[in-house]
Image 1: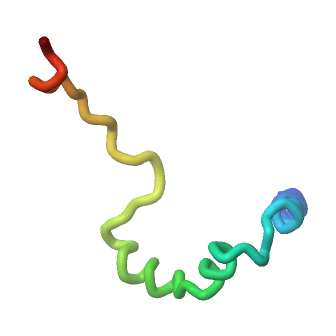
Image 2: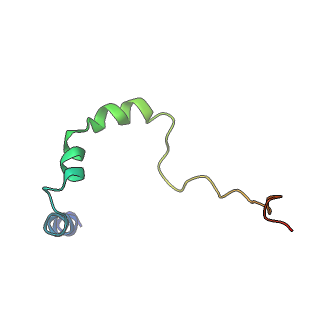
Image 3: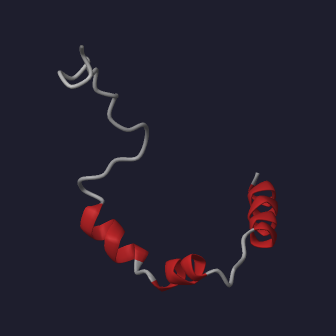
Length: 61
C-alpha cells in the first residue's frame, strides 16, 4: 500500500508545475502552526450538511 501512495505522489510531482507561484507559496507556509492553531476547531471528514433554502423574496414574483 505504501508503494502505491509513493507512486501516486511521484506522478503528482510530474503533473504539477513545481515552479508555479502557488506551489512555491505552499512550500513556505508553516502548516504545523496552522494545524496546531486550528486543529481543535476543525475536524476531518465531511463538512456541515447544506442548509435548506427557500426562495428569497427577491426571487418570487
